[in-house]
Image 1 (tube, rainbow over the protein chains, first blue to last red):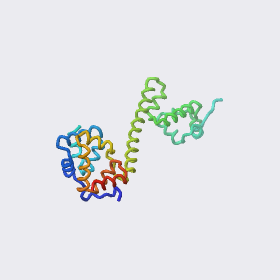
Image 2: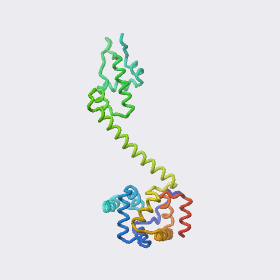
Image 3: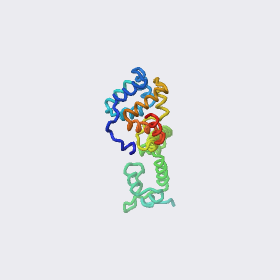
Image 4: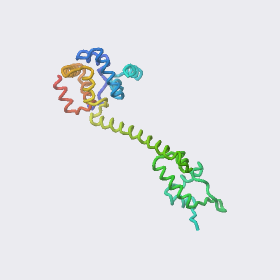
Length: 68
Length: 172
């Protein structure tokens, strides 16, 4: 199975991703910093990542704008 | 006796099509020539030289309107027009290189849409405050929680399939 054929079943959601980060070492402040780094250093990558988590265009823009 | 051309002869002489010459005539890029008694266009050496210039400018990708201004002969806009085209090309090169990079990344990842590469990803986590132990924990939790997504995510960072499998094995 190639990565493109990978189905969306049980695809990790943003809430699960946040929980994962929290469980493994990033608190809320650090996550904010991470989003800011992501948006400032790799804006296109940030967008691609948020879309991969299943967020729609409006939500993606909201998160990105908050961290520019 | 100066050289005379019919429109077909002129087209052949400058390497453009007759249709193109008719188009240039229509838009005024090639001044309308004299006519024979029967009404056929008659061109001269000056027209050939002008068309050769037009062709060379088109090869640079310049727009017709800009070529018109260049051929009008004023020195003023000359540099500005060429620089404008150079900037355009520069922009296209940046855009094409971006496409190249995305495609290469996707080929390398076996079909996963690229996000950032591994080095960039690790750098951001470190800067945000995650240490090595934290990253190891993160892989273990990710593998436990969503093994398929873990796999696809590692591929999207440009990590080759073999190394991805190794990371996942170790995280299990």
